[in-house]
Image 1 (cartoon, rainbow, N blue to C red):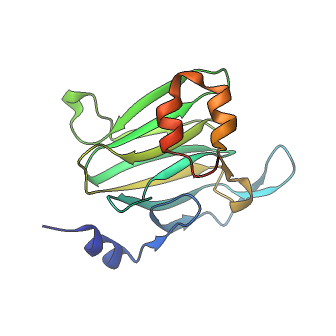
Image 2 (cartoon, one colour):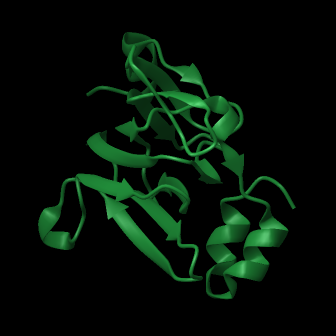
Length: 166
């Protein structure tokens, strides 16, 4: 049976220190587009993304300026929380058990706060994400625990668990 360490080695995944987990960029469009601020961005980017049962191996609450599509490849189910600009929130379960309501692909629209962690008891999950326009490091915004707790009072437990900053 394949292990998280096998996947990290085979795919040459690297630790993602700010967000958490492991990743490898697999595609970056050579064509660019200017965003609403006039900043150049690739049309599209794609990565492998993996979280494990290691301490602090989760995707912290963050938001991005482009749409991001998560693709579930293998491993254990992943819980996501989406927090929308209007104050609403939604929990999503990524995985292969469609009958149980899991989804193999999930869209997170631009500007929506998102996170990801293994469902309880999980060992690892290998996913991918595709962004359009493409990911740029300057566009990544970490969620402040204090700010998010004030904006989304119905999601205190998950926000406290999935943020790294007070």
